Length: 171
Image (cartoon, rainbow, N blue to C red):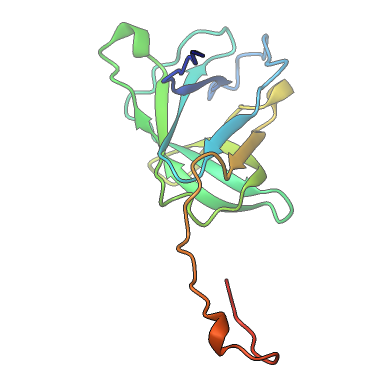
């Protein structure tokens, strides 16, 4: 008998959030791994916001938005507002969760996209969150059609009544 290990994990990514422009950029992300979302299932992405000294940032009362961007048009096709993790837990300081429901990704085609994250101020102003390599404001995101694809009902075709000129739409 073969055994297969399965993992129930939340995708996690550390990003640089430094609204204080007086601080020089001392540390940078050298490799930002691509994120993956799966159609047909609920997905959660967890970001940990760090300052340039790689310390967790207090984000209490702040609003963060995750954007999925279509690469050829550079238009945002989906945006999700994050939920802050419980700031009373010392280990959860600087964490924000982005939840994508099955229905939110239903219309997105599988493939390669870009993503960006920004802080949305109370006045509507946006502040960049550096999520890519070398202080890039965007990263790579792959939306996968599998393994949670939906099924379509089969069409029943009666060949007894068909002639050589009959066409059947099976879509």
